[in-house]
Image (cartoon, rainbow, N blue to C red):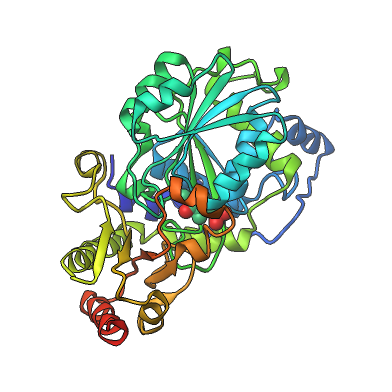
Length: 411
Ligand SMILES: *Cc1c(COP(=O)(O)O)cnc(C)c1O
């Protein structure tokens, strides 16, 4: 098999491209016309390959779906307008009222908010410390259908017990749903730990340039859907590995309508070509910054799985090509948080992560504000915690920027 970047860069050409174009063209169309009305009917009935309507399918989006499937080593992918749409519609499409799922408590903030909303709709969730497989196991009931985890949690960088939970899900016949956004398929492929479905926010590392929103779900072909009673009879046709992804596409994408725009798909596909190059640089910068801060007298704690003192350092080394491009840290009491942030000149004060630019955000006051102090405390989020998403700038400029902010903000 060819290498990761070779496969991504050439994946579009695996299907014929119009006029020999090297980039898959942007198909800015909603509908598709047919000469023979019987072909139109066959496309709708799924008996013949063909395009139906832009909310379900678009050639530019389809090319990106194939690229993501190739990156993850999966069976088939479906793209959505955002990462949140991918998570929400997938769970909506697969679970029913009365079902229960177990989730890591160390979650992207909006995912946490979404899962709490599910509990008001009859789908129950238990939040547990997913760095410990025993906590996941203890939360399983006879109504549990699925386990949801992130690879490295943001902002505190806990590394999930990915292998152990994979084995547990296989034993208990549970769907293993892994959010691979923080590692990206370049650093880690959840297929290796038995994932059933992988989601990615394409907005982050895969797109990489902070210029387009998108999300994806990939079927990994490792779960036996024949015994899963929530699948509709009409989708139980053909290869069982594709039953669930078909239901996600129909009940989730088509009926909820969070379709990815072809223009966004193009931006993301171009960005994805350099995923490996960007990640190498971003991960190297991250290590340098985390090590600099860990040795700084005005820093209380640095959370980065690449540091030997991190509780899951060994797990991160074993599982990931590099320990990620995001870290967080707390300042000592003598440094004013706002002064420090405001004196950063290269690093941008902004949300988002996975951009080419380095971004800093005080998390308790912004992205984790709405959940309140108690839930923040349970997630280990201190008021002085700063999250840094590391970009591709020159390492020395980033270190110098941090040093300058300490000089200006310290007493
Ligand atoms: C950003 C993010 C999401 C949501 O993705 P959007 O594209 O912003 O909707 C989900 N999970 C993780 C881990 C994320 O970082």
